[in-house]
Image: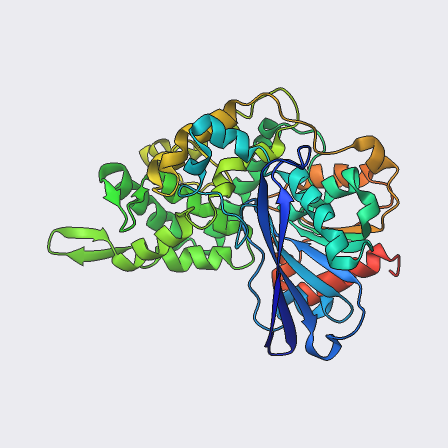
Length: 433
């Protein structure tokens, strides 16, 4: 089923596919995938090679572009592009607090969600590729978690790829979630220090807001309970090119004088709830740590446990002294399932996923060592979301992989410097530079 229409400079075709929930049980339950085909308007009738885009996350649908912005314009010079809403995201069959109860109780929901990791996403790609390309291999562009999926693709089905390009998404092949977060907290601390060096006035602003939240019960208009820890998690912004500036502008209008005294402003609360809510991407919270599960060890709320090894992130302890409040980054915690109304009904489901001990390996080191697919990866120096050392170790383990290590961009470099980033990586993959 497809429906075509135009935007400036492009022709779009909405496509839908039906795939098995469990690819090992093709006769069982199915889910629907949505994908948007994009082609340059003046090349719509040409027979072009395909590029499939795998979004970061997990839990986010593909970009909703208008026209040819960011990396898309460069891709459309030679490709027909497929923007895939990975299973459970965007316009694909949703997985959220409204739909998951259709599965049954928390145990059934948790079992269902084990099919939403990189391995299932890659098998989805292989299931739809014949219908899209006529069987020809395609190029994959994987951003962040999409890069994790791409490394799984190189492990599981390299025959489906003509080339692979990864931006900010080379995962460790064997790190447990504990290793990931033990490496992450020092990186986050460096990003926070850089933010305060840029905006020293934010040290006192952040302390004042955290102190207010430690002494007041604040519930945002959506029902989100804003705690000091929740406020700290706004540090996720600091991994993007404009994130430090966005955080600064947010903090500068936090308070307003009211008849009852100083209070958090409506404008501040409105912006914060949009940044903190998982209503639009609940899978990010539900399966985020599961993307690191590869053996019999449970993830067991890894980010929460490992945080205890870094007491400088404790808000109350920071405010008891004269040091700065440290923001946190891309971490998921049990309290989020208490604070966020979009997650509250799924708390027990999340607990079961965190306790799971039957995760299967996502990467095949032997097959990667024998890789023959042209592949290039942008590795961003001191990337807040993906550890640089882990990425470079993986780069050395994949035969023929070429890296571009740069501090010119943050984790969202493919958005900010899209045409140039994609152009360089395609040239690297083709051995043209």
